[in-house]
Amino acid sequence: MVLSILLGIVGLLYFLWHGYNEWNSIRQGFNLLYNNIWIAVAELFLMIINVILETWRWRIIDNSRLHSTSFLSSLFTITESIAMSSATPVGIGEHIGKIRKSIDKKGSAISSVLGSVIQTGVIIFMGLIGIAICSNTNSYLINYNTLFIEVFILIIIFITAFLFSRYISKKVKDIFKEWTLSKLIKVTSINILRYLVFAYQMYLMVTLNFIPSYINIVGLIMVYYMIITIVPSSGIVDMGIRGSVATSLLGIWGGVAAIMIWIINRVVPGIVGALRLIL
Image (tube, rainbow, N blue to C red; front, side, top):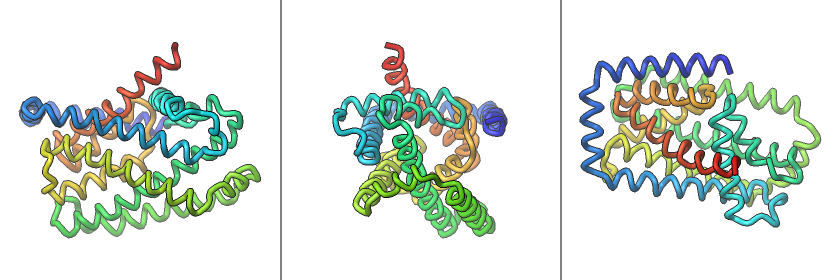
């Protein structure tokens, strides 16, 4: 948690420094966004799709404990989990929010974590594809670091898997039995759909253009999501990490775009969830 807060503060300072020196680029970006207001409308529409997909995914993941729960109730549960995620260290509130009303909280918590692991795997896999795209399009992403990044990621994955397998409990093994091949395929497919939605959100905000014609930007966005997934983040300081990483890869407007996407996808549904929790 301390590391994530420090990274968030440093990242925010880095982003603000670039913003101060490149204010004209930011102003030009907002002028373009104002002249293309449909981009903002599309972003909100994609946010709704994203929340619906996440609700659908959660209902499949925790199906055995959600038989009597309506889709609308599950959707509100997701907004509550988003609100709690933004207000807790390293986003642990996401899992707490999802299991709050479960009759088997431990089982739902394990299922939620397993779902997050699959989602992380999808993002990392897409990120590696993004590195390949950047390497083949002569992007300014440093090509000679490609092998180092991939090896580093694989080492982290293997260490995590090793530690997880050593301390796995009987309860976790029982939850694993719920994960049939059909369920795994469904959850992974929805994760891929969600990834395409929020990646396209980022692409729209960065390019302010509905026409997908910048393959190098696509690759950099894929790398961006991989990096922010691996780097530890905590609540609102996540904004600093996202802004600084996007600025490094996509320029200052990319950093602004990343923060706006964060506000749309986390703050807007989070407000709905917070109101539900309070009322």
